[in-house]
Structures are given as structure tokens and as C-alpha cells.
Image 1 (cartoon, rainbow, N blue to C red):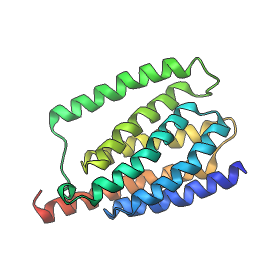
Image 2 (cartoon, helix red, strand yellow):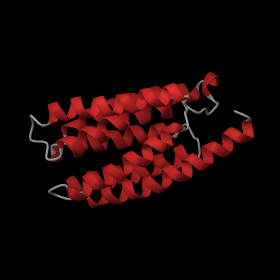
Image 3 (cartoon, one colour):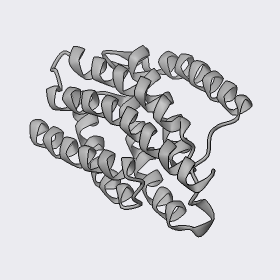
Image 4 (cartoon, rainbow, N blue to C red):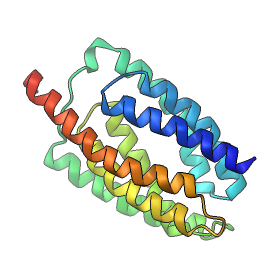
Length: 186
């Protein structure tokens, strides 16, 4: 059962990544389905930070779809220097705080789980509001997610491969979104 969840989440994750790279709002529907599968998978793997992350994402999938459907949020923008400093501080402090909580559980990788959880929250927020910095954060995050899934006691190889692919897709997404920004004069 766990492998089927992993395979399903991988398929919907690839679909979501492709649709997001192409700046399509339907990426949020694929995202919601992927998150449902990932909640169950993460519970089975005892990755409680990921469970919280994926529950959050399920709600975000709905909100993201609504925001991307709004005519007020069609332009892709860059984060200001101040926003970048803030998100780096949030990721650093959030990782420390979440790792402290996760280290009290049977989470096999509390620090790595905490970092990927917190940086995912930040990256997803910036994806919802169409800030190109989302792809920089996702690039780093996907590398660490790939490591996490590879070194788990019961390796999640499909999710490892998905995150390797997503690492490259983050680069492609950044390039594509930058092209859209230039074309629209954002």
C-alpha cells in the first residue's frame, strides 16, 4: 500500500510541477490530490513534519487555485531585498523551532524534516503570490527532500526520484517565469 501511495503522489507531483512551470492554475488541483496521498504516506513513514506540511498544503491548494483564478494576481514579481532577508530568517528560525519539537518524537530525521517543512511553507507561499523567488527556494528544498527520502530507513525511492526531477524543474520554472516577466514587462 505504501508503494502505491508513493507512486500516486509521484505521478501527481510530476503533473503539478509541469503545470506550475507552465504557469497554469490547474497545477493546484494536481497539488491537492498529491497532498492527500502524501498525508497518508507521511503518516505511515512517521514523518510528522511532512504530515503537518501536507495538511497545510491541502488547504493551500484550494487557496492557491482561488488566488491564481483572480485577475488581481496574474503578474509574476520578484521579492524585494527585505522580503528575501525575512524569508531566510523565517526558514532558519523555523527550522530550529520545528526540529526541537520533532526531536521529541520518533521522527528519524528531525532536522532535515524540519528544514524541508519550513522551507516548503515559505516556497509555497511565494508560489501562491507568484513571486519568482519560489523557484530558488524550491531548488534548494528539493535537493534536501531528495536527500531525506534517500536516507530514510525504508527508502522512498520514487519520491527521491521525484525530488531530483523537481530540482531540475525548479530551474526550468525559474527560467520560464523569468521569460513571462520579461514579456509582460513586470
